[in-house]
Amino acid sequence: MDLSIAFLLVIGRHYGWQLAPADNAADFWNIGASVSILGLAAHAWLRDRRLDSGVMLAILGAHEVAVIAASLAWMAEPWPVPEGAAMLSSWAGFDLAKLGGLVVLLGIVAILKPVSSDR
Image 1 (cartoon, rainbow, N blue to C red):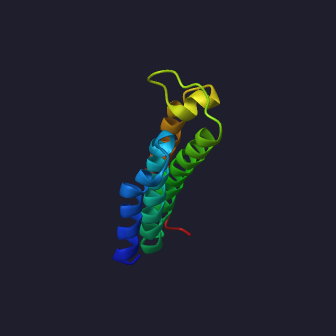
Image 2: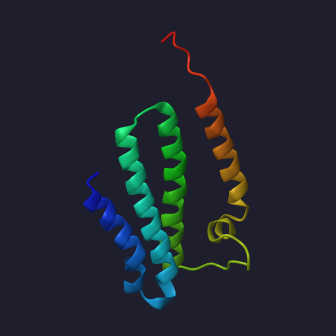
């Protein structure tokens, strides 16, 4: 990835939310941050295509896509979010952080598991 592309991703994330209507500014920030993270992570994956890198990218990608989807859904039709609760967990009706923690733990196990050299 050319440095100018990384620069545009980060600048878009940092300032793009200011172009949004005030009610949606936080969602635009979330979307911009997720797009930036996905772009930078994809660049890292293109440079290092090992299995452990792919596992990390898959976990990170799933999270960032969920952030984008939640923000877009919230802008289309907001739902009640209790104070201190996560937006997507409130929509799903259960604590997604626990599921996310399990996925991260499984990803760590996959990364740390030795790969057989018999292949």
